[in-house]
Length: 431
Ligand code: FES
Ligand SMILES: [Fe+2]
Image (tube, rainbow, N blue to C red; front, side, top):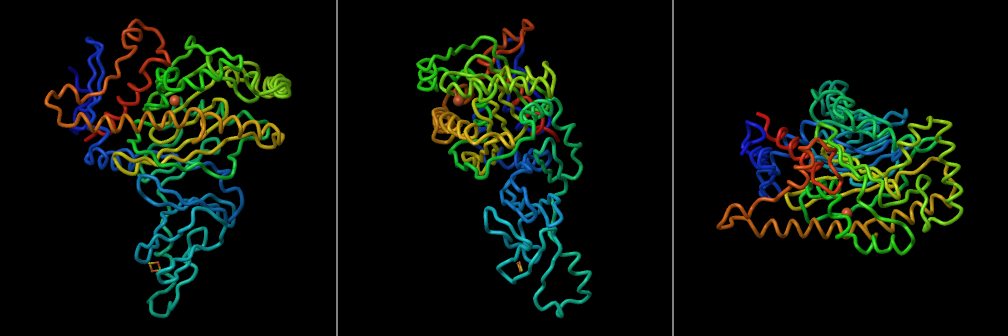
């Protein structure tokens, strides 16, 4: 049996044996407080994290608050139009500063002692400032704390709490290209639809990653949706669907077999008008991007995972999904719809309707998936402290023999999960 990495013992929770074609993950990786603490420190504290898309805060003064790696943040556009990301904690005594989820403001005022900070971080109002020596120096020292690193790729804004992380494109590696494919769909660019779907899942965050990278569950778990597709005249197949290890823990499924996509691959439920638009859209993309890139964008659906907290679903509808671990058995999920800037209202409507019917929180797919990973979490609790320790491992060896023969991994195998777990073990195992 080979332990993947030396160093911290948590790395030994992932076991791979290339000879015996076995790959398994110890279930304490999903339920232990210690693992959760180490992940928060070693992963969330030292890598790029997806924060949000710049079109979520289009106007000066727009802001959103959200939490990454357990730290509350303010994501805002300052009055000069620059994107700023601050720790959402008053520099005076630490009170959470902004208690709204979103809005537009020039100032963030703390309710405790009424200090007020401008949207570019200066301490603008300090009640009773004559009680402080060197007021100007004090104000400067007490400005809002920015996160150490902020960088953007194709409008996707990432932050890091570690100032020494390598630059964002190095972190994204091959995943950057697939983000660009989705970002180039619209001739006038892409934007997020206002509003977010926010839901809490009673499961470990890594189960959400596994679920997204797991084509094996599609037919059995989503059999209602698959039946619906068949009834509306669309074929469903697992042929020519593959999984790719993009390095750095990032993974990709490329799917040609099961779903139409608005503007890309027409299917009967989209209606006749959309059929004509799909043909015109392809011509527009070929003119703008060339036939090769247009085909790469249009001919297959993609599910992209960017380690550790971003999922980009380029399927029937385009969905950006962010994972925020709250506890070993609790994950907050945020999802946004990603659309073409300036597309006709009826296309936008069709897109939203299609999203709601499948990947929306009340659609035909997402509730199945949430039930699956909550059920996994409950089952994982059941095998803790088993008399036979072998029961307390989850198997992820599907498709290893096929890969060993040099074949590209299939989406219905577990190769994308294995590459995620290998990287996870490397990161949490680092001394
Ligand atoms: S803690 Fe914010 S003003 Fe005192
Ligand atoms: Fe699913």
